[in-house]
Image 1 (tube, rainbow, N blue to C red):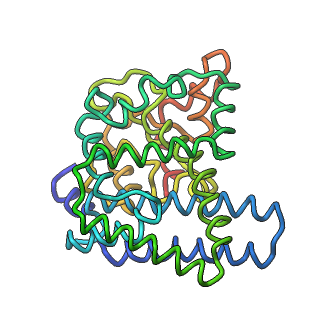
Image 2 (tube, helix red, strand yellow):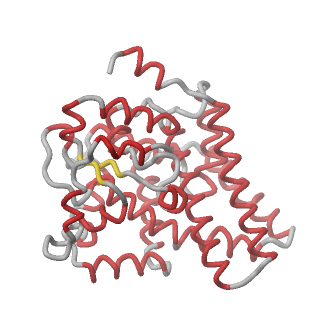
Length: 319
């Protein structure tokens, strides 16, 4: 890829970013309103999954803010990211940025904080038996895995530089005002039903699946391709598991300057490169990612076929 192409792909578009933020928050509010109005248990289960996926989408937008991809003005970028994307999810973008940039610089090495958190944990060793994998997913789905989410947020803060007192006070004031306003408006129960429960259940599950897909259960690859995977996502996967083109993970690691809404275009350009198309680990779906996590005897033949993509699969990558 030449410099002109990369420069064009890397252009920040505040209008597009803002529209996506508003879209996701609007979707959360609409889903909660509809579920409350037409209440039944099955609809509520679907709403949990939908809102949990919208939380994931907002966190992916936070990730773009971490790379200064939301706004050209860095101060506006950072405060927009904190107030609209990070703080509602109990993290700060500033602490996440320090952790995440280290992950980019030292991916899957002893200096990668993400890798260090997982490398000695049996839950992150692959292959796993189907029984073990399903057991882990069920624990995430019923909220037990939410403990790990709190630990993860705490690890970001403990590894980051100590924030200023003014920053801490502003964040505390944010929570007091938002929670106070919701309780005063009679929405305290709705906060639990439509934000906290999806946060500690569906969000935890799909973040695990995403993390597995990005860096685990991958055969050894040469050089920069080692331990990174791109996964094609269909309509349902994009809606409930991998929104905002987060499935194009190799592309993001190679070119983190490219904002989320151009990653599919970047992928198409990279696939025109013979070495990338031949060497990159690209899996055809998230279901096949999970099959790659199983011992060979437990996985189907289709899992083996999914290790390398074919050019014909490009149509699946379109957002």
